[in-house]
Picture 1 (cartoon, rainbow, N blue to C red):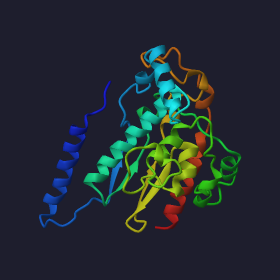
Picture 2 (picture 1 turned 120 degrees about the horizontal axis):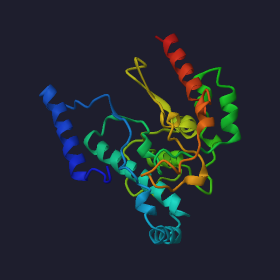
Picture 3 (picture 1 turned 90 degrees about the horizontal axis):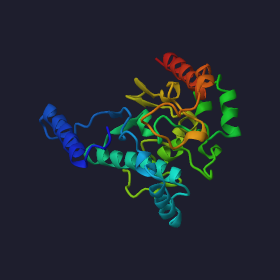
Length: 266
């Protein structure tokens, strides 16, 4: 639980999976799957501990990252580090399955620190949510409506950048995606709450990628505890009010709209 799987293990697994697809057909032709699900928790436990195990270590990361403009704080550095790992993993998957769409879902360990999500709300985002009853298109709002100039970038924003091949800040990542996992049409709902959908087989199959981190009793959104000790829950903020929210981040409203439209289009 305290380290990532080595690349050799990941590559060996993907290589065997790719060869298994070839063995099914036996003709040597491309037998790529329709999609690959990455179901979350791709990162090791306690990624933030790599950056905050001691004050000296935190300051050294802070100083080095501020100097080249990559990040402004140790908190920003650890978030970017987590997003970079997700990007690297996705690049490796695409090496072995270059013609296959990837559907990614967020796990609690994919956000840094664990269970922590600080959402970037904008007036335009709330306006779209207010009109959500009309159609799913309201949730696929123009990507330009979302702010990309925050002084401290949110974790979902960094994950979106990491998994978008043509994103507005992909130069922050060393590896290059072959195709985007998260697309501009996903930006509004993903930045709003970490959810989106994919359609396959001419609409015959709909995959909904939901964010269940926000329903956990360990979910944190308070800026008072961004870097914490994962070994104890005593320093976690009181989230009792959040647990009474009928629809955190508008995800249930969106889900009902998507399912209703899917039913009508059967």
